[in-house]
Amino acid sequence: MSTIAKRDLSCNEEESELRRGPWTLEEDSLLIHYIARHGEGRWNMLAKSAGLKRTGKSCRLRWLNYLKPDIKRGNLTPQEQLLILELHSKWGNRWSKIAQHLPGRTDNEIKNYWRTRVQKQARQLNIESGSKRFIDAVKCFWMPRLLQKMEQSNSPSPQSSMTTMMNLGNSGEASMSSMSSSFNINPSMSSSSSPPQRKFIMDDANHFSTMSNPINPSPDSFQFSQPLEISEHPKSPPNVFENNVCSYPIQDNCYLDTNNYGMEGINMDPLSAMDTYDFSQFDFQTAGNGWMLDSMGDSTLWNMDAM
DNA sequence: AACTGAGTCAACCGCGGCCCC
DNA sequence: AGGGGCCGCGGTTGACTCAGT
Image (tube, rainbow, N blue to C red):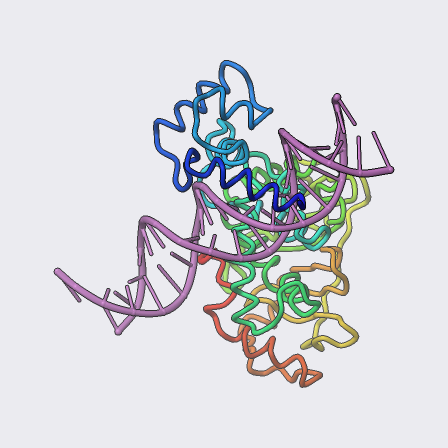
C-alpha cells in the first residue's frame, strides 16, 4: 500500500472524530491555555493532550496564524507592502521566508495579500504576475507610489516609519540590503509654495537617510555609511521601455528611472515640467508595451488607497 | 430591501524535507 | 537503507462581508 493510501486510510479512520472548519471560542481557549502551560510544538500530541478534536496541523495553523499573541492586526502598512514587494522580487513565493522579515505578520497573511491585491493588479493589467512586465510595473509604479504614500503618512515625523521599515529589514539577511536607493519625494510639487524637498537615501548596509536639502545636506536624523548620492533626473520627456529601462513620470510630481529589478534606480526627483504632464502624451517605443500606458492611464489602477 | 458579484481571509490540502528508529 | 511520523510550506478553497445595482 502506498504512503498516500495509508495516509488516506488513517485520515478516514479518524474522520468521524476530527472537527473541521472554523474554530470555536472554546477550542481557541483550550489551545491558548494548553500552550501557555506547555509551550508550542509537537502538534499532534498537543492536539490530543489539549482535548482538541483537531489535527496537529490545524492546531498549529490556528496558533501561528491567529492566536499567537504577537500577531499584528489590521492592514499592512505601506512600509510592509513595500518590503513584501521587494522581498518577493528577490525570493518569489517564499512566503514564510518573507514573513520572517515582517514581525507580527504571517506567511498566510502575506500570501493572501499577494494573491488578492498584487495579483489582482496583474489581472487588471492583463499580464502574468511574476512576469518581467509585471515586475517592471511593480517597480515603476507601485513601489514609488508606496514610497510617496509613506512620505505623506510620515509627516510631520518623516523618518519614523521609514526607520521602522529599516528596523524590520535589519532582522535578517535579506532586509533591505538590495535597496541601495536614492529617491526624492515632494508630494506638494504642484502647489505654488513647495515645502523643502526631502531626499531619502538607502544604502547597502540598511542605513536609511533623509535630508531636507540634498544640495547642501543637513541630516535630520540619520547615519551615513556612504557618501550621499544625488541622482540626476532627465529634463525631457523620457523614453519608455527602451532596452528594458522604465523611465517616465510616475505621477504629476514624481519621476522615476529604473533599469533593474532592485530599487537601485528609483529616482523620484520632483520635476516641475511634469506638473501638468499627461500620460496621453506618451509615445511608447514599442507596441508591446502599450499595455502599460493603457492601464496606467486608468487612475483606478495602482491606487494605493485600495491596497 | 433584496440580490449579486467581487474581495477578503481563515482554514484545509498535498507535498516534501527532516528526523528517528 | 528505508519506513513512518511529524512538521512546515505553498497552493487552493469556501464562507463571509460588503459595495453596487
